[in-house]
Amino acid sequence: MSDTTGGLLTIAALIILLAAVHKPFGDYMAHVFTSAKHWRVEKRIYRVLGVNADSEQSARSYTVSVLGFSLISIVVLFLILVGQKALPFDRGLPGMPWDMSLNTAVSFVTNTNWQSYSGESTLGFAAQAGGLVIQNFLSAAVGIAVAIALVRGFVRSRSGELGNFWVDLVRGTIRILLPLSFVAAILLVSQGVIQNFGDHTVHALTGGTQVIPGGPVASQESIKELGTNGGGFFNGNSSHPFENGTPFSNLIELFLLLVIPVSLTRTLGTMVGSRKQGYAILGAMTFMFGAALAVVTWAEAGMHSQAAQLAGGSMEGKETQFGSWASSLFATATTGTSTGAINSAHDSLSPTGGGTVLVNMMLGEVAPGGVGAGIYGILVMAVVTVFIAGLMVGRTPEILGKKIGTKEMTYVALYTLSVPAIILVGIGLAIALHGTPGYMNNPGSHGFSEVVYAFTSAANNNGSAFAGITVTSHFFQISLAAAMLLGRFIPIALVLGLAGSLAKQGKVPVTAGTLPTHTPLFASLLVGVILLVTGLTFFPALALGPLAEALS
Image (cartoon, rainbow, N blue to C red):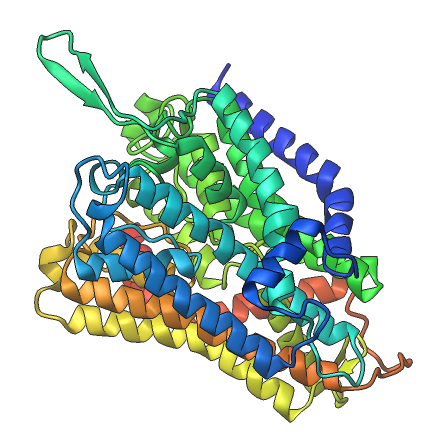
């Protein structure tokens, strides 16, 4: 089977699978977060936590719970990583250095999963399974909880309450993430993804012995993709055969990293009582994803150089079992979501392909975005869109029955500016640092792109990298940790503030002058606004990086 045929079949199968589960899974998630019934195991967890599951929280209380829980998670994971030598199954490995431990703890709690280390040679099984995997579940559940809180802000009237964070966290973990990741892990094991607790020593053909690393990989791999986390057990991530060994396992992983973000659009439509609204948001996401996929595939699978013609495509940094098409699809999906997992080396992408996946993250990862983060990110941009439309026709902007006033736009404006500011300040500091050129694997525009990619990935909580850059210095460990931390929790605090402000309002009746937000016209306007904001913000950085490289 040719690379093109295999790629087209993978795309077709992925579309069919996502379409098949979109309605039932989206409606199921809506039921999870609107049901008044608590499962028995959930009640026991609430008792341990000392939580009144039937009480509701204001936006301020919800925010404090999110930030407090995440801070405690960072501290606990930091201590696990620093002190892994005292844990069972440590594989004889020492604890991580403090700066790397801090970077990694922040990375996994913020759902970024940026890795400045090789998992198989740095971490024991207890740290991987008891530290990183648990945060894969919890950070994803936090993202879903924040998204649901924002949707409740649109749904509720004169309330100011957004639900209960602890209930949302537990339900997202117990009812959604755990069962799906369990089934996915079994499917991955069937495709050769390993699940054990031991390294294996084998005799090499040339004599001597070699240690083959093992570990509980399938259980980490499933939630790594399902929770759009992305941190790999092995340094090779999803290009390693023990993590992703067959074209079918590749399809499973692609499905996992897209299924929750895509299905949450149905959850949105169900909860707000307008399924068309969910389809409009999905349409905008799909258009941006499809356009990015077309460009990356054209750049990577096209025969645009003599070397590519001889190889049948730009194959540097790609696994031959996946080829250019499947590698392009994975790269687009992992940067269109906040996953960051890779099945090819992004540093080896062509200037056009690498620039496109970089833009995917600069869009705010809303095509379709991370678990929870994608839906609340694009809803914020929808508020920007109705505000601009309101200015053009001279009406107070409205969306989903809520007026967008000064307070709401303050939250939205700060949200829109915060992550780009973190990225650009980080890039400026790194480039101004005298030693940064020594950390770059490439000179010139591509080296600059490596720095731009690192801070864009960190602040947008993606975690993938142009891996040519060395980020183990104190500066990069601390600065990237700060970018991840601020890029995660400043937007979350602003989203919850916006949700609380919306929930306090009454419903505005639909009139002849109300802008419909469930139409293809609005979806097109939404895409245009997202592209315009991204272009105005990041074009200079792109011009100095991938655009300059492409034209050189």
